[in-house]
View 1 (cartoon, rainbow, N blue to C red):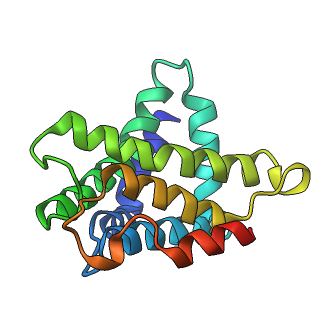
View 2: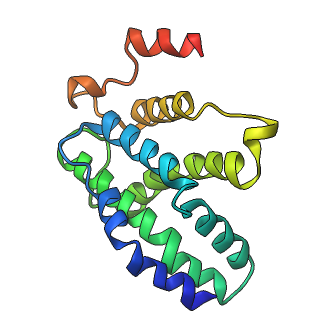
Length: 172
């Protein structure tokens, strides 16, 4: 199981590369796009099953756990760290790109609620017992992240909350 999980890193390398690269997008748009793409592929491509099964197999298992980390979770976290470093270098995120702990903390701060929400909705059948509208959830998550980590001198479209964001959230 551990070796099978480690091989995922190779087969998912192309997707992981897209997680690391924000393109020309500012912080808010970059994170919204990433979250939307992950949510869109979670069920149809089996990404959700991979995350769920790997985590279940790896928890409290000294062999499968590191295999899951090496092959699935850590490549995602490291790619997210790289994306955030790009935003920090551009002046869009209040992070020191050389401070490994701060960048890792920020990456986990973004990915953790997103992954838990996807597991809740799809792995645990939350869509049937407590549906979570994914797009408004993502907007709230990203706006909170940008409020915490976004740089005030970043791109104008990256401001944490503008009037249209606030009005839109009141409707949901």
